[in-house]
Length: 197
Image 1 (tube, rainbow, N blue to C red):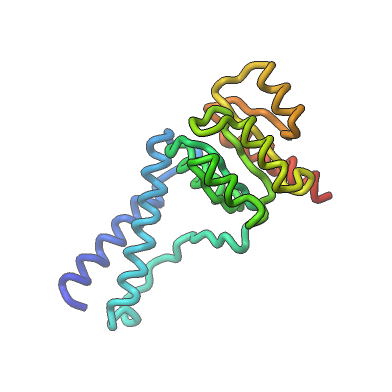
Image 2: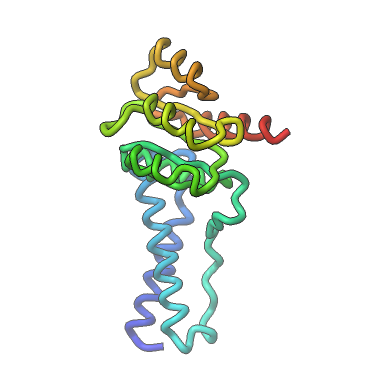
């Protein structure tokens, strides 16, 4: 293995070591996003080394990374939320809990894709610039069967009127933001498991 490959291999080892120190349950929002980015970098580097080095088989193998296969996930969730940080955090956290995620920053883009792919649940932000969560739900109900694809509304604007309107429109639940991630996963799985029973 040449010097460049050895340096790259050492970098992967160092990154993997740092990654193993993360306790995801206790990380701040910022560090959760950093941790997810770090994991993706490690995977890319590891794959690059494996395909570019002919001497790789003779080297000690790195411990296997906990890769996530969307095809094997228990549930699929579409997140419709215009906040990129929220999307990144939810995608990272849901992967840990066997939930495959498709993210839409635009409600209009999400609406265009509905019906082309089946989701178990839609997590819809209430306050979005192009159309509100209520408008999205009203339109999407014409394209999907809400008895099969469940809807949960999330919003920082959490008041009783909005909650009642969401439930009247067919949403299963209304959750305040910022999300309590553990509670959110429990609510999603509880609703989907009860639906499957």
